[in-house]
Structure formats: structure tokens, C-alpha cells
Image 1 (cartoon, rainbow, N blue to C red):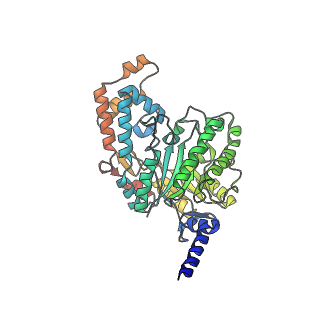
Image 2: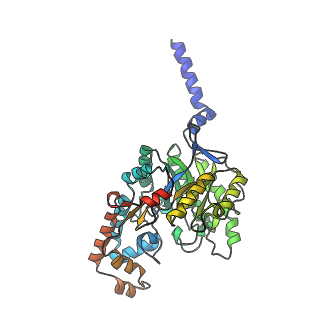
Image 3: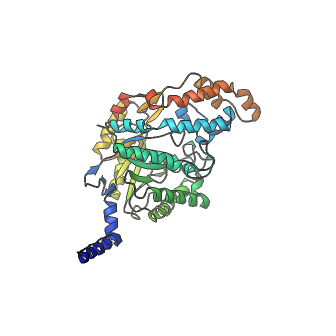
Length: 412
């Protein structure tokens, strides 16, 4: 008996110490790439259908009703000018607490969605001033909570670095300074790779995570040196993927396209990793296959899956046609966004009384110097009440689903 137990122990140790055997067992827990398809651990096909948790961890001005105050940095500065930094920090904590909760994730699962994309700002993984915190940022805490709720409801998660160090886009959507400095700055690139490596290490053994989207909508089309910037895109992608693979060989990595995730010409090599997926975006234009023919052609030329990471902000009929087209063309999709004020989302919240009259008016007023800030500032008690009511209105039980919008996504 002792000899038998000894032999069994040796056999178990041999299996557990074998890199190939261990990796195979571990790898079977994750969604994987198989040609132009995604495949579940049981071998069945996985077709992405879901939504984006936009505005939660990467505030955008239009979601609040703001025009020119349109990035997280500008919004935060405006709030500080309005009610001071301490109340602003209090606002951001309540905002993050209320915007996405377990009830929101349960509702998303109930619609027939199987995937959520989480856009986030890189600052959530630094000690930079962001959303009320100046140290000990809560990026992992916030995303871990969603991962837990997704595990409970059977959803998968795509992590999207929507705002990269230095800025990858050069417009308000990346919370930058008006230029994609990420592609010019070695320090920003080092931080970019470091953050992704930390994230990958943290989630390396988490099957709920479908994949890592390196950067959202890189390199806006506004710049005179567009060819030069586009030429720096793939080298940075390869460098970042190499950093991720040092700690995580399990998860898919998503490569978008420059110029709003529409121009795949700069994506010159997809052979450097065996777990890559392509991602595109589409807003506006005529519905139907003509709007995505180039995406299909590039997908077919690479033999990799293509995924529509953002689509929406249109009529329900337009969205219904596009959803059917994407399904017919084997391109999974996540609509933008899940929750916002008023409309064009799955779940809408109503802005409270005095929000537009006080907060939006101040945000849009001239604030170029301190005299203008003082002359534009409304009564602070009224403003603070409006801000408190705003975050209170974000709670799921106080929001209302937009059934026609959800129906147009063809989730069931």
C-alpha cells in the first residue's frame, strides 16, 4: 500500500510539474480563439452579445449633459471649482458606488447579454489624482466587484483601456491633452506596458475575463503626421503583448484599429501571438453590410475573429438592422452604452431638478480665469444638492429600462 501511494504521488507530481500538461488543463478554462470564432471551454461557439459600462470608470461629458467640459479631467476641475475638492471626492465615490451595482449586472444578464466591456482610465491603477482619489486608487476593487457579479450571472468581461498614459487618441475620449502623446513618449509607453502587465497578472487565472483590449480608438484622424503616428501603432502593440505574456498566456488580446477603430491598414501583422482578436467600431452611416464590408475583408484576410466593440447612438430600426447584419457576418458586438441620462441606452436615469440649470450652466459658462469662475458660480448649497441628487438617481431601482432599445440589440 505504501509503495502504491508513493507511485501515485510521483505520478501526480509529474503531471503538476509538467509545463505542457499544466498549461493545457489551465487553458481549457478560458474562451479561446479558433479561426474566426471564439470557443468556450466545452468546445461550443461563443458569439459576443452585450453592452459597454461606459462613463462608470471613464466619465465623458455628454453623459452628464456637458458640451465643452467633455473629459474626466475637465469635469473634475469644474466640480472642484463649483463645490471644492472634498465634496468633489465625495461625489465621485458615490458616483462609482451607484452607477454599476450587482443589480445592474443581473439586469444585463437577464436581457440575454453574455458579455460586458468595461472601459477604464489608466489612472485607476496609479497614484495620480483621479475620480476623488490621489493615492491607493480602486481600479482592482471596482473591476473585481463586477467580475464577481459576472461570475454569479454567467457573463464574461472585456477590459478596455479607454484612456491610456499620455493619451492614445488625442481627443476628449482619452482624457488627454489634445495629442496622442503615448506614441511619442517612452515614459508613457513604459507605464502603459507596466499597467497592463499588472492587470494581466491579477486576472491571469480568471475565466470570467474574456480578454484585454489594449487601447480604445487610437490616433484620431486630425493630425498632419498621421502616417508617422500610425507607423508607431503596431510596434507598441507588440511590445505591450510581450509584457502581458510574461504573466498571462491564457487570455485573448484585442487589437483595435487607428482612426476610431475603423482603419485596419496600420494593423500590419497579427502573427506575433496565437490569441488575438480584432475589434472595430461603427456609429452612423447606412445600416447593413456596406458599412462593415472592409472589416469583413480584413477579418477574412487574417483568419481571426472580428468584434464590434462599440455600436449604437442611432434609431432602434438602424440598430436592429445592424444587429442582424453582424450576426449574419459572425461579428460579435457590445452596444454603447449601458446607462446614461435620458435615452439611447439600455437603462436611462432622469437628471434631477436644478442639474441643467446649475451644474450644466456652470460647466458651459466661461471659466477662463478666476474672475469668470467667481462670476459664473451658482449658489454652492443648491449646486451640491443637485450633485447629490444626481448620484442618487443613478441607482438601478431609480432608472428605467428602454425596452425598444434593448429589443433592437437582438440579444435573445
